[in-house]
Image 1 (cartoon, rainbow, N blue to C red):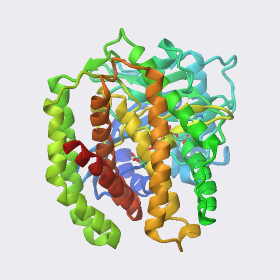
Image 2: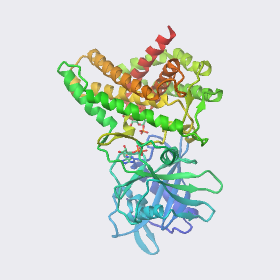
Image 3: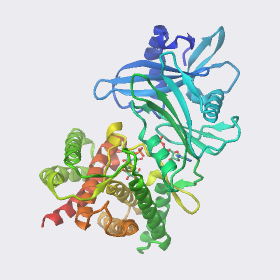
Length: 515
Ligand SMILES: Nc1ncnc2c1ncn2[C@@H]1O[C@H](COP(=O)(O)OP(=O)(O)O)[C@@H](O)[C@H]1O
Ligand SMILES: O=P(O)(O)O[C@H]1O[C@H](CO)[C@@H](O[C@H]2O[C@H](CO)[C@@H](O)[C@H](O)[C@H]2O)[C@H](O)[C@H]1O
């Protein structure tokens, strides 16, 4: 942090060009570069621009735009507070700069680090406050069914979790997620969690406790935060599956193929919870945003176009990064490229083949990391949808089999990552390992799918028949694996062979359908 002292005033902050310029040019660039929530670290920034200041008590919810040399502009939320010197120990990662206000010296900070800001948030929920802005906009605090606090004064902490938004926990009971990357629309998570809590008896999500919305008079509203119940959990299902795989690997190294009965029990439990979630979403009729819909022409075209665009982007990405891949990944990438015509042919079928199944709102970004394990059950979190999609796209209804495919991909990831990335198996022949991974995956996948479908019984309007189930499942498995290539190339290049192998497996199934 420099010695520079920024003179600020909250009144008129929105028009203070001097403060905006200093923030944009000097303060924000180094600050956001160290923030976990800033998603543009790998991109070349053209300009940062302070956009809005929404007043809230003695704080400000500031928004700023990040424009890049290439690609879409992003809008971020950064709540600001002025904290006088020696009044609080603020974590260095929350400090933007030295500052002065009303002749007092202190710091301009990311307000989540200021206990007074957190107290004000909680008290505003308690009193369901609405803060009128000068331009007729309103900052509105809404309480949900799960908010049962008897006092507006409560202790708060910032949990130490790796997350792309910012979390706060109030009184050990309420989990507030302050969104960082924001969109000019109601966040799908706030919509989903509120609707499910208020209108269904599905119990395996943290119930809705409140939301903060910036209601704009001349533009769509923006969700700033959502609050839900705290889930008491020791780990998520990704880590738990990792534990099961440690046992499996230990036995395998000793020459045994062994999966404990309790593992099948947990997979079945997840299948049942997934199906119950989908049943609840299907039953939420009455509101247009949740009504089930058929596979009409418009949707089929959307699905087709989205997949084709994704495929083109991934081929370009793989071509651009080909030389960075290891030999096996290069081989798999090559196979994927060679299969282009077959994939296009398979995708084309979605335009014309009979599809009488239904589609509903779904989770949209379903994987093992989105499930928290409590002592004896599983709780599904993070309904924000697929990170690469626009907010409008995230609210489009799909076959629930898209979520099922997401989870099946996750099991494939779990076994591949464990068996191929562990020191314990480094001396074992790759083909032998692959055979074990394939067997584990097949048993777990079949268990998950059978248990899932059994909850619906047949016939069920969501799934017309086995032909449609097979096609839609393969379509979404392929789509997800192709999507994952992008995530891996950008974040974990050594893992890119996992989705590439997944693609090869789906293509082998597609090939069988063609015979
Ligand atoms: N209701 C909750 N109660 C307790 N911990 C939670 C809750 N929701 C999320 N978490 C924790 O926060 C982490 C990030 O949550 P998530 O919803 O995925 O946030 P993000 O969208 O910021 O990634 C989860 O992996 C979990 O550890
Ligand atoms: O951050 P999100 O949870 O929204 O999702 C992104 O990151 C995920 C990784 O954390 C990524 O998931 C992929 O890796 C997982 C293992 O780390 C695996 O369980 C998933 O099946 C696999 O898709 C996800 O794709 C990405 O959107």
